[in-house]
Image 1 (tube, rainbow over the protein chains, first blue to last red):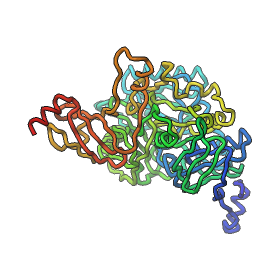
Image 2: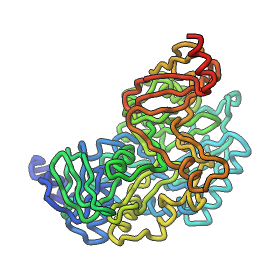
Image 3: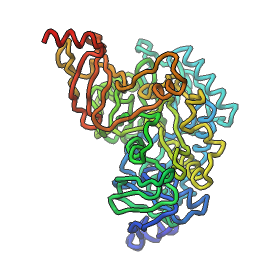
Image 4: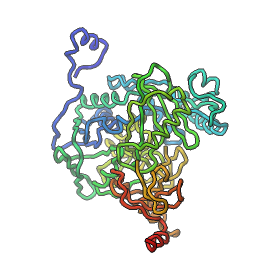
Length: 423
Length: 94
């Protein structure tokens, strides 16, 4: 495989681009792997990469039922931020953002990470107070780029938002994280896949798990559409379908529900929005950024009921369009290019799980709600650490399936144990 | 778009309804062990397929309903009043 460098790009340019090779292999499944990661999305591929890179494991496979990056990895709005205030989340996402900052160099793949700022609009004095409390916490705990902006500063940075005084919810300021931004989702998938493959990881596409073989408290093998594969250890990283695999392993109930989240992209426009802008007021929720191709990428709330269907409903399309008009009225005549839905694991407190399971050699990564994309590097890092060392590191000690039994909810939004409310 | 046939109002767009959640959960007695309450509040079957769930017709009669819905195809199999007394009244009038 050819390494990317300025010299290589130049050389291929003058020799007709004929020297590039496959980015990753398409191997036949072996009969046994030391570690099998189920799920060839961002988290699965990142986990496999860090298993090989950080822990030196070489006999690792990633099983993907379709093509890598074809699930939620290709369905999100690519926002990266670390403005979480609750203990546990705060350290985890701070670590993730640091990994994002060096990711392109580490993977030798341009993931187009653009630290363009994340601007959450504030519409009332109490919202400013609440944001100030959270962002002061962040500033004191290793996130110095968290700021509260007044209206004048916001108008200078983002001039074309709806600042009308007669607006239903007039803008009064913003909570800003300057190191936050966006990344190119496909490039992250391909970058991790390429780097993992280079370290010997087998990426097995069109390989759906159809059954889990158990010997008492251990998983012995996985039945797949490409044959039976025995495994030393197994990790599940299958957002949206975790409960189905959990049932195949005969493990009962989980503190998650599968809900669907829609996202939208408009026709390409000339540069219009340099930041990620978020609007959350009353029942409304809306976030928007502009991709490098010029499309406005945006989304809103969950479809309000549980669903495994990867297609969204029309009332949410209307809801998101209304929010778009109230935040950026200049979008009123822009055409929608595509919209789609992904199935996400909504957890009972809005936070994730990276943890051991009731089975000795099975490990679980689930419950990412809206936030799986930004978590990718740290989720892979710490899930790999858990699988390799067979114990949760302090960083993820509270993100286990038993935390509710201990009376702990890491509830960023304060919404209580109702998955559909953790938007 | 899903239509839910409200037993009181007739077939209506699902945008008129709010979603309650898994309708198969049976909450334990008030003096039941904490573990039973933990399981009822925090754990879910998360069925892919036909699921019994609760919806409220908030923009109509405001009644709570029990709905059997396929969580993959969105097909609705049955809709009945959540209150067993009301269900039996409706049946006696049918």
